[in-house]
Length: 200
Image (cartoon, rainbow, N blue to C red):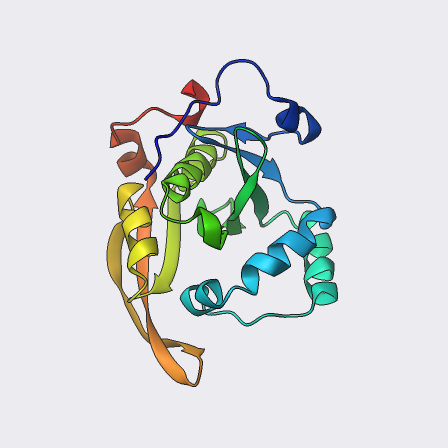
C-alpha cells in the first residue's frame, strides 16, 4: 500500500483543468460529466468490477445517455475520484437520495490498476463527509456481494456497520448471490475519530 499525500497546498496543474467539487485526504472528487462516459465504460467493463458489483457491460452509447440523464437527476450525485495529479482512479456516487427521510445509498468503483492502495477508503470517507457535512442526510446504506472482501473491508474502515444479508438478491453469471447490507448513521459518523474532508 502506498502512503497517502495531502491535497492541501498549491493547486496542481491537472486540478486546474478539472474543477474539484470536494477535497479529501489523498483524493479529490469532481462531478461526472458526459465526457467521462468512455472512462466509466472501460472501468465497468472490467471483469472483476462486473463480478463484484454485479453488472454487465452495456454499450458506450447507453452509458453516455445514462450519464446525461443522471446529470439532471436531483436524487443522485456522481463523482470521479482524482489523485492529486489529476489522474482519475474511480467513481463514487450518492444515489437514491431522499431528503425528506434523510437517506441515500453509496456506490464505489475503482479502476483495476488503482485497487489496494487506500484510495477507496479515502474516496468513501470524502463522500460520507459530503453526505453528512453538507447535506441533511441521516442514514447511508451500501450493498455488495457477501464474498466481496475488499469492498466489505473499505466499508468497515469508513465506519459502516453490517446490518444483515439480502439472500439471493442478485443474479450474476447464472447464479444467485447474497448481498451484504451495511449502513452508517449520522451519530456514528460524528463519533468517528478521523479528520474530516474539509480539514484536508
